[in-house]
Image (tube, rainbow, N blue to C red):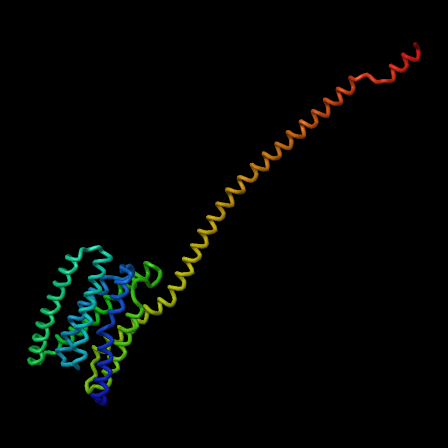
Length: 288
């Protein structure tokens, strides 16, 4: 493979910049919403652990400086996002959250520094498999970390809590970093697999958001419409129940009025029938 150092450095630098800031949109979203519902804390914790092995591997392989710096920034931001999950999701106190972050960062730095010197010692002795093992561990952790997020998507039936901009920037970092490998003298298969998996799994989340989120919005709209319809039906039922009672009372009033009228007419007729006529009086007078 033809080596082009300038292309390698340029692409690796772009990828490293993207991967250094990729978690910022997620941190901002969680801070703005004061919620991490739908974002798996396991994702951020495991990815933070993955950067320990990834950083050790890239430094031990003497990769380009941007690629060596990138895991450190990525891991630092992952821990902040994980701390937000503890604060907003698990309701930890700030003191407890800061203690957890301090412990993680101390382990992060100590383990990585010790691993780099151990891997260099192995290389001097002709043993390169430990470095390759670190690379494979990184790939495994990147995959394992995303699995809980897929469970969150399954549980909510949509993509919520996770920033799609975070996923998009992550994909961009994987693409540029992966392309840089093609311009090196020795193609790093392990690093390429890591970058490819990141692009694949992050891309799947974006595709799921495009598919599931509109369906979820329609489902919520239908549920709201059904609730409104039920409320209207209940209101209409109350009016309908009241209306027949009103009609019945009016009908009974009319019936009572008719009975009174009939009674009055009958009374008049009876009185008239008992009143003597004038004809008999004239006949008596004539006889007299």
